[in-house]
Image (cartoon, rainbow, N blue to C red; front, side, top):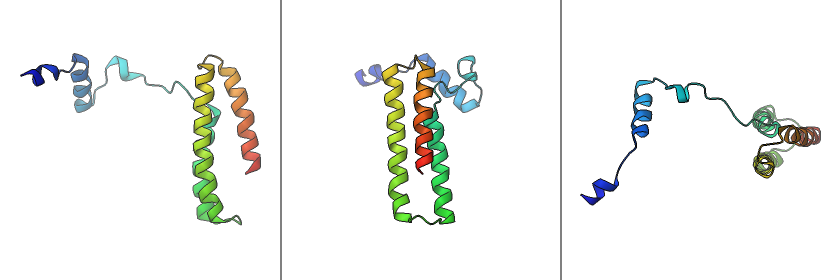
Length: 111
């Protein structure tokens, strides 16, 4: 009986389950928006597709370099994005965009 007493769900949990099962959304989940978009996240999406494009087309660079460079670059960009956002606490968005746009432009030029 003690195990059953400690295994409790809140009312909101059951509401979320019923919303998922019926496909209806409540007013709280109706207007989901991306709260944090940055140039590094856009660059990561671009590089993921660019990586696949270069693998398929087989341009003059070697495939071994691509297989090492792009995943390494994507992981470091994601890490740097989270580090910058956490350091500035998401308050100075103009500074974040300025820094990340500059670094993104340099990365694209060097590729």
